[in-house]
Amino acid sequence: MNISVELVEDNLQVKAVLKGEIDAFTAPILREKLADIQLRENLQIELDLVGVSYMDSTGLGVFVGFYKSVIASNSHMKLTGLSSRLKRLFDITGLGEIMDIQAMSEEVKIDETV
Amino acid sequence: MKPFDYVEIRVPAKPQYVSVARLTISGLANRLGFTYDDIEDLKIATSEAITNAVQHAYSDDEEGEIVIGCALYKEKIEIMVADHGKSFNFEETKAKVGPYQDLEEVSFLREGGLGLYLIETLMDEVKVHHQEGVTVFMTKHVGLEQVDENVEHISS
Picture: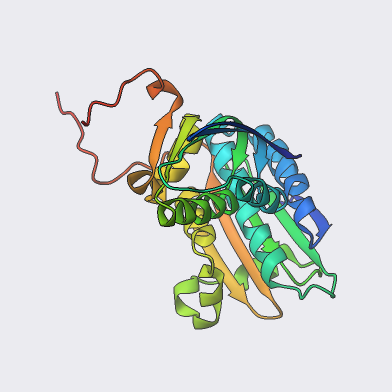
């Protein structure tokens, strides 16, 4: 059981591809890896969760913490590729309302809320 | 004959064993015929209870054990997670657990926020017993859909 994070940085775009399970053991590892992202103004961060097969509140905690620092640095965070299971976890905790989240089936949809 | 099969596992109170316990629960739930979604719910709820035990029950230098007891009935699973490391008499301990709303001491379970909330949401019944550590008792029924009461039914 482990988590891997692959960071691809390009100017003001950062994509982090997460793979594995996020629980009490791997959450601190994930938190550390996300801390490697140099937050700065207008940075667009995408966290790709397609490869996340399990997550519980420890993972939600990591994303909430990271989201707070993202907001504080005036950058933007988007979660993409969530399975319906993962999406549900964000929804029942109310975090789905707060964060920019694109579930797997919504991937192709273009943001109409301009 | 006992009305249920009983499986107990005991793991060190360390985060790396949460996934081990989770896999066991997944296997047991699969045996009972839970749906994929229900099994995922059980995995999360159990992990939350064990994570709570790992994070709160022991100080860093003291190494304890967590006991996870599972009673397998034909149509439901009862899971008890205790952080005191001692085996328990399942029925006896079960009789002692009560709704946690009545127990102020358990308020610390809410620390960090979402763990207990998720357990409540994902399981059909949750009780907590607080004496010699914390025991979380939870039940899930096979095939019992938790239908949102606000959902309007289409009448024909």
